[in-house]
Image 1: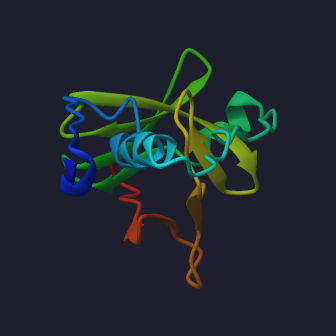
Image 2 (image 1 turned 180 degrees about the vertical axis):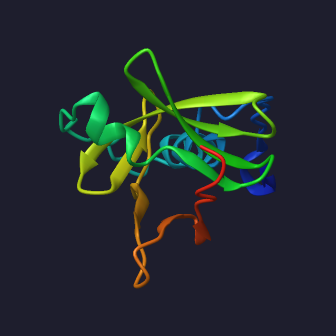
Length: 129
């Protein structure tokens, strides 16, 4: 929610999922109403990877919170014990973005200095994939 009392403007964005970036949308609406130029949403170029290449990123990174799964040839960032599936696609080595989402910085799923896969700073549980 954003209030601009001097212009009698109130912007409210409600969302019960993560399909859109509601903060960027609200800011873009505010900029348009205040005659500020708005950047076009970013679209990253997808880098094709084989299923075997995608599988190396799969696994549980934080039990019941953060998991990456390969489903029907597509990679998904799974959250909240499997209640939210967000399709992600590769845009570079270990870099992924959400499909249908205006994302500024790609997610990074990469090996740390010990050769362990990490996502959001969490090390993948190699026992549960």
